[in-house]
Structures are given as C-alpha cells and as structure tokens.
Length: 269
Image (cartoon, rainbow, N blue to C red; front, side):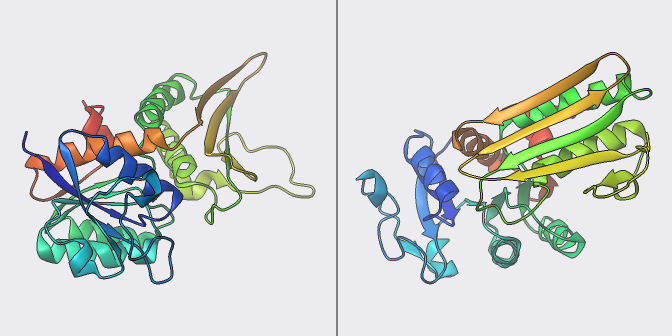
C-alpha cells in the first residue's frame, strides 16, 4: 500500500493531538496538513511541536492550505465545522473520516450528499472495541427481547457539549433496530417527579458529565432475578485514534460512498 497523506481537523485539541501523534507514528501514513480555527491553540505552529517533533505540517485555518495534497481528512470537531469541511472535500476529491457527533437530520443528509462525490467513513465512535460492543448489543437485544428493561448509561468529561453521547445514541439505535422498534418513539432521556411505572417497551438513557472521564458506556438489561451489563470503558483516546487510522486505510481504494465502522471491521457480514 502506498503512503496515505492525512490531514487532521482540530489539530490543537485533545483528540486532534492524539491523531497527530498516531499519524506521525504510523509507517504507512504521512501528516500532510493540520487545521485549526482562528484563535485556537497552536495556530501557525508545526502540528508536531507539542511532541518536540517537526512534522512539516503547519496548523492553519485556511482550508485550501491545510488540505493541500491530502488523501484523507480526519475530523473530530463540531457539526458546523465538519459540514464545511465535507463540502470542500467533496468538491476536491478528498476522502473523510468523521468522528464528530451531534449532527441533526439535516446535517446527516448533507454528509450523505457529500458521500456521492467522495468516500466517507462516518461513525459516532471510531474505537474498534466500541464497534465490537455494538455487535454484542445487537445479539443481546435479540436474545433478551422480552422480560428485560433496557437502560443506557454514559459518562464523559465536563467539556463534552452534546448529550446523550453519539455512542450512546448509536447503542440505542442498534438495540431498537434489533427489537424492531423506532428509537425516536421509544427513547426516554430523563426522569423526574412521579413518572409512573416503567413502560417495558422504552429504552432509557442516563447521562453523567464530570472531571476528565474519556468515555464510559454501559447497557443494562434488567430482568427478573438477573441483570446483564455490557460495558465499554475508555482510559485513553488512543483507541479512537487507531480506529480512525484503520478507517483511513479502508478508504484508500474507495472513490465514493458512505461507510461506517462496521464496514471497516467487516461486521456487516
């Protein structure tokens, strides 16, 4: 496989720096560019400066400059920024790996349209472990379709701006699909006061925000006399970064199309 040129959006952020480090440590990838918004950390500096390395990629807010020569852009920013990046990449034949969460239906439709012009891997969580967990949840939901109440509990750091997390929502979607339900109709996102007995057809969500928690997700299947818990806990963003690199390699021979991590990992079979 020839060397892939990778650009990183949000290169000065926590996830961006993890991605920069991962790319610089990969033998088959080259950091070709780095994007940051005006006023962001590291703007105008070498993207590898925080590691004491000279990568040759200067963090810039200019899309044309930051994406010059890029084969793939990896983007874990905010929906409004990602949509701008997707429009540019679609127009210039640059592939995308998108880990951004919080898109509304219009945003998801815009990404689907962009995928008609370039290849995109879009997933709420790029971790290989999380996506294997999603497959396990699909199996569990089918086997525990009656007699079990389903609750999804997620915890993240105090800086996360959307809730529930994209991963928690994806877990809910996978479970709802396996049960033949529509998550929009059966999700319960908060409980307060006298709520009455629990509707057994619902899927509940609980959100925790605090400290520097990277990301914890637990799905509870609570039955009579027993409960099953399926959990994934992240102690580092390294798993997200490595999954993103795997997704970038997957796109190497793709020209158009919208893919997810199930496609990358062969879990759709």
